[in-house]
Length: 78
Image (cartoon, rainbow, N blue to C red; front, side, top):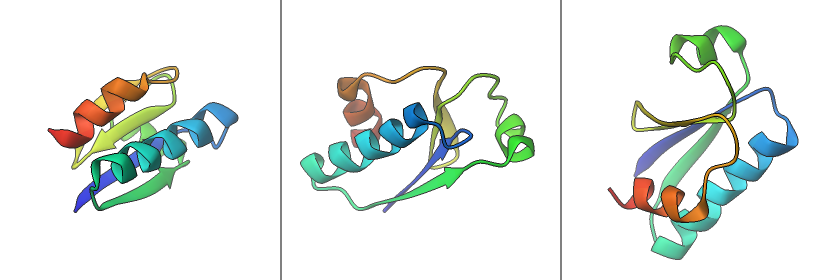
């Protein structure tokens, strides 16, 4: 099971990113846990300055703006 964290204040882009991760995981048949992290201190701890950010199994894979669905699928499949 992959551990995915979506970093951001809970804005619409952050919500869309979390849903994009869930959709890509379902399409790939992967088990993932998606946690939304809204605490700015925790977000800064990952070195993220602009949100939304995505952390998969402890590794930052995206920061700032909506990711492309193909990229999300590629990150989850890796």
